[in-house]
Length: 247
Length: 310
Image (tube, rainbow over all chains, first blue to last red; front, side, top):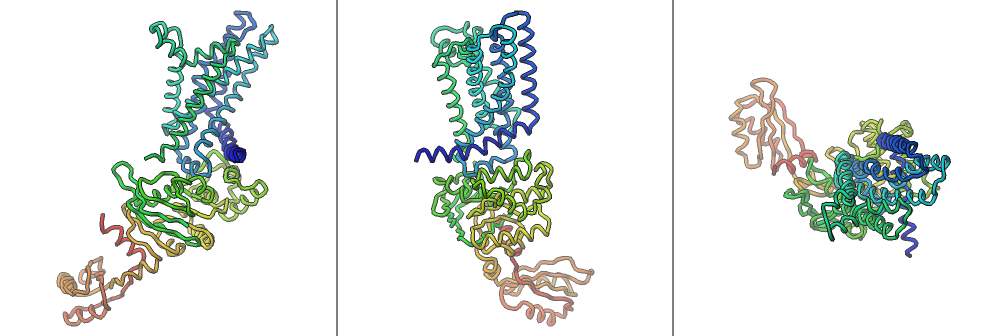
């Protein structure tokens, strides 16, 4: 019984996910952001890399959360906003697909797209590995951390996009939310605060958790943090979509 | 097949639908008639499960739209009024996508798409991006999307808008054909379309149903007729005299041909108005130049019902 439900859900999600994924390649915006992301990160990384002359990826993983602040909202900004603007949402939500399945399909496709861009950035660790003695474990941990952080960012971006029909608004608001979540854990902010508030902010911040993962320290608490917040935002997204049926 | 009971939908202070009840049986094509903003689209959005009603119920095939929207949507094809399409896709890509999300078995997809391409006349644009299509072709893609899975219930919001006259006739024939076995609701404000395709009509105005029945019932229910005359004589006296008969409703003047020839549309409540007018003309020594009568048609019924209150 349960199995058939899962099977039918997958059958609902797959074609939608495929369409959404292909749609990224039909729009120039995603190409532009992906290209800018790869060029800028490569440039910034290798500039430092040859100066420091050390086979380490720490700079790259320090850069990544900042670049994601721009890349993730760019990927998700059109997801719902565009559907609302062109009213295709009326077609989409009258298909025999559950709201949760639509959200899952949108999240999966954006996650795949982000994964693809990250895969293209593997040139950096490969180059570093050829030039020196790279700790492959740390690099792998960093990439897993990047995927976890990216997933959470995308879930925020999707949620924000579902509140508006304007892509620019979706981009800027997502960026602000992600930025706030990122800096509340930084020392600049925490130095003004003390006691329980500081530790709560530190716990909530995406930066704190990413720092430890990117240094190769795999703590289940960090993984649980990312997965649970991603799930929370996706759940809120389902609610915001079905809110049209409230009252 | 579809039962709608006391359906009400409010958007803030506005009542888009006010206590609307009607039903549609299998093998019936129901026409929704009404001016813009009457509530036709709102009723359709509720039946398709896109929005929830504020009050009242809509039951499709024994299932309530609020509780079982998912099951209902599986047997339903819907063309929204705005005909939303993913314009970044090519026509055949889009139809393949719709066929896949509608769970048409992979082995039958190619045939289903081929059938819709020929039925909706899409062969010449199948490889084109939807972006590049004219309004009429987009409308055909929208129709193809709604019918590709051969649904039991078809809900079409202004299906023929943007189509050329030949295409309109083809689509009407198609809808009538489908309507023989399936359940169809369509909305329109093109009145001849209703007489041509619909077995029953619901006229909505300001969110309320003002009339329903077959198009014959709606026109036969009223014995009203209008007699159009052209008369030579004093304008004021003619109007005055005619208005005084108790079987005459309104007397409206419209443009005559010369200064001394006056044209009137005389509404007759009962009896043969022609005889009355002829006798009035003789006894008052008017010269009657022209006279013909017209039974009230669906268009007149529609205009009478939807303009009187506003």
